[in-house]
Image (cartoon, rainbow, N blue to C red; front, side, top):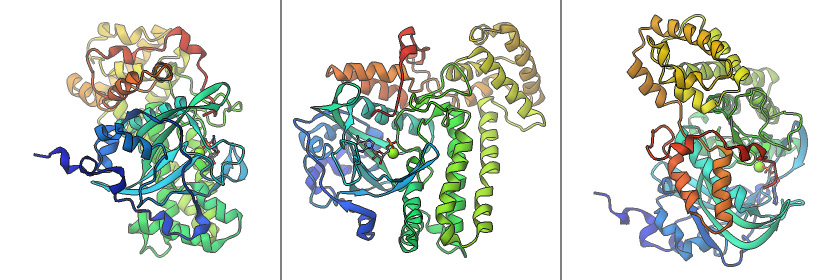
Length: 498
Ligand code: AMP
Ligand code: MG
C-alpha cells in the first residue's frame, strides 16, 4: 500500500526539493535570472491535491509556513534557478513587440510520475519585462486562474495546472485596491508562440533555431529525426492547437485573450484572465469586457486559433525554409479542427455512428440554442435524459427553451437519427454524461468564492475545487453548483484587469 512517505513532500522541507531547470540551460538571451520579491505575512489560500501529485508533493504539506513562503517567493530553495522568460507577441491582431514574463517567475522543474513539470510563480514581483505593470497578481484573478486550470484538467481539456494560491495583505491597485496573491502554475513548458515570434521579429535566426531545437528535443523528441523537424514542429503544434480549439468549443470555454503570447507551444490552455464558460448560448458572446470588437468571441475562437498558428508559421519560416512547406504544415488546421469538432459533437449528442446529414442536425441545434439563449451546460446535460420513444418525458429540457415548439421539431429529427442507429437510452445517457459536464466554473460561482476569500474565508475555494474536480458526476447535495446564474450575476464583467 502506498504510504504518505511515497511523496517527496512529506519527508522534506522546501529546501530539499530536487529542483532542476532545463530552460535555464539555454543561453542568457532567453531570460533574466532574478529573485522573486517577497510579500509581507503570506498566508495559505488553497492547493490542488491532484496537481500536487503530478510533482510528487502532498497537498496537505503545502499549507505549512515553509511551503507558503516558497510559493509566495519569500524563500528560494537552493536548487531552484529562478528566471523570467522573454517573449513577444501579437495582441488583438497587432504586433506588440517585446512582452515577456512581467510578473511570472519560473522556479525550475520537479519530476513527477508523468514527467517533469515547470513550477512558475505568477504575481511574484517586478521583472525586466514588467513594462508599466507592478509585477503582482490580485487574489481575485489568482483564484480564477487556479480554479479554472483544475476545472479544465478535470474536463479533459489540455491545460496548465494550478498548484497553490497564497495571499498577502499587501494592497495592489487595480480599479480598486485589492489584496496581492501568488498562484503557482505548472506545465511541462510555458514557451509560447510569442517566444518564437520574438526572435523572428528581431531577425535573430540563431536564437530562433536554438529555441526550436530545445522545444523539439525536450517536448517533441519524436520529431527530431524528421527530414524537416521545424516543419514537423509547426505541423504538430498546429494539430494540437486545432484540437484545443475544438475542446474549448465543445465545453463552451472562452479564453478571452487569445493573443499569440498566450498560446502554448504544447497546445495547452494558457493564461487564464477574462475567460468564461458559455451560459445563455450566444455564438457571438464576448467574455472579455476589454475586447470591444469581439475578436475573441466564442464563434471566432477556431479562426483565431488558425490565425495564431499562421503567426507561428511566419516566425518559423526561416527555419522551415520555404513558404510552400510552411503553408502545407498550416493546412492541416481546418481538417484537424473539423474532424475533432465533429467527433466531439457526435459524443455530445450520444451518436455512435456518423451519418450523412449529421452536420445539418448540429447546425439546427445551435440555431435552436441561439434563438432561445439556452444554457449551454444544462442543455447538453439534459439532452442525455431524453428517451427515444417518450417525447412526453421531455419536460425539463423543453422548459429550457423559450420556443418549445422549435425544440419539439428538432427533437423529432434527433429521435429519428437516434433510431437509425438503434440507440439505447441507458447506454447513451451513460456515455453522454461522461462527455457533457454537469459542473463548470460559472462566473458567479467563482465570484462567490472570491468574495468570501476577500473576507479571509477560503473554504468556498476548496469546496468549489472539489466540485469541479468531478464535473461529470451527479454529486448529490451539490446540485446548486449546477444552477443557472442568479440575477445579481448578470452584472458581472470580467476584463484584462488582473
Ligand atoms: P496577459 O494579457 O495577461 O497575458 O499579459 C500580457 C503581458 O503583460 C505579459 O507580458 C504579462 O507578463 C504582462 N503583465 C500583465 N499584468 C502585469 C502586471 N501586473 N505586472 C507586470 N506585467 C504584467
Ligand atoms: Mg499572458
